[in-house]
Image (cartoon, rainbow, N blue to C red; front, side):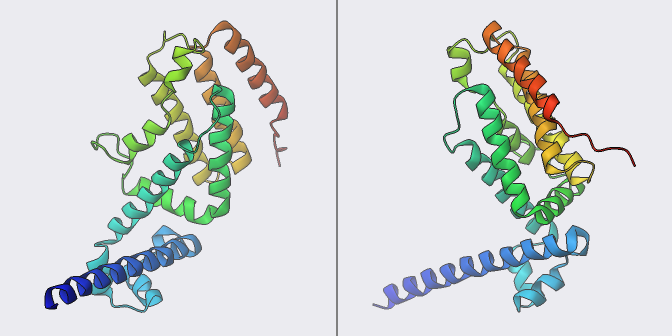
Length: 228
């Protein structure tokens, strides 16, 4: 009986610890969104969570460790979007993924801007880190094998090159948005155009015609703000 009691007690403690971490991560998200990554401190987080600073360190580690966990959750969300049964057609697939991404960013724009900005400052997207955030994010951009099997893509451009190009399109658009140079609508236009151009480089003649039409239509709809 004593062994069962000890095991039950450990289970309860682990469950409570997990709930506490989740609660504090929510508070960290809110603080980052409202005050930005620069103003975010462990002491402030501890105060908001009504726990001691050592408790925060015991649960998460350093400030950078909290950022890493938040960025990891962002990547998981993006991967979840990609795995949510998107359309098989390359054009509709790109639109689906970008629309989901824009909706997610728009849901909590201040937080996403602060989180991505802090991730860049901490070099969390360093491509030289094996299995790091950069490589995980890059995998999301990998072209689907069905596109090659069905002849939509010719295979003259290596899939890894296509993956890098599409990922770089997303990354550049995200950096422009985080930097405040473009809004989310412009982000979608910019990234979608870049992805469709990348696809056109290896598309079948039939798909190439559709991509050209889509790119031309996209440009005709793009709103260009008047100069002040």
